[in-house]
Length: 437
Image (cartoon, rainbow, N blue to C red):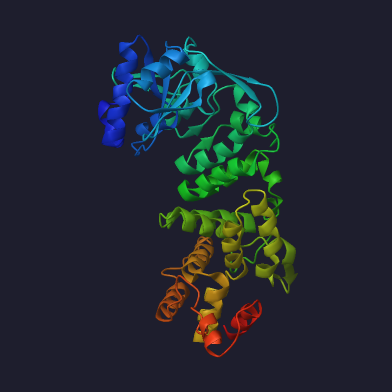
């Protein structure tokens, strides 16, 4: 089976025209060019494609650079092994590459471009079969040496070859791909991943895979389940501690804290707002919101209680996020949501006053974020239903009326007021203004 030419309509007109121009140009000079990797996968799924990877066979790197330079401004990001970017276009053009493992991590490779490499050898270096397909839209020719199309139809996540284990980042890539496309990881792939160590992966690369899990995963629970099944949850002990941590069945009929967190993550994903930053902040807060329960859970008169688990979650949340990112502004935005995730229910039940709501807004920065976390928390308890989440709607309406829904209250007393009263500006202003606030 092949892709239908109309699938190219999923690519923007400008990107599509540039891509076809390059394919034609390479063919006219004795080479062959294919769309490869994720863009082919996404076209099969009928999804919009915003960037394209092309792989060129039969033309040496200097000749390819010269050919492309006649028609486009190019940026050589890996000229020594034949990787080029087109300036102003989301297109990467590369020769098929041969990689030799020389050291730990995802950078411990010697990479050599080889335009004479056969298709199967080139595809074998890719991570998963669903990313190993090559497609020539001019001839409507699909090259699929590892049956990626069939795996995609059957929603299987299967590694392409034994080369997979050379790059530990691929385990986390499997996590987010499984979540994004609702894939069922093959047992062989899970087993292989269980033998791979992290090899001190850099946080920026780790963060990118977690980011994709949260802002693009249709069912984050599948990705987190994969992380558990292959044993990589051991690198995130805060998550691992949730497994087997009991909850009171009256409030949590779904099971332990781990199961609850998986349901919450999926509930969050169903209601993402499409703003990557906001979704990332809320998504991480949902994952972390019950990290304090393993530290506080105890039995009281045949009931399971976790008093103070919100505050107890601060330390585990910090340590978990520190393994993933060094972005202080992100961490500082997530922590208050974990510390106050029960407030919407508590405030609703107690009919909290305006002052309490203003103080809450100051503490969490954005009440709309907090309500999203609390809503996911309540939805993560099947078969219990929450309906319209009355507590969240109430709090949002009150916050909107007080103009603190998506920002902290504005200060009434400013530095200029102190100056008007004869104060000389200095370091003491900060303490005075904070006290006034």
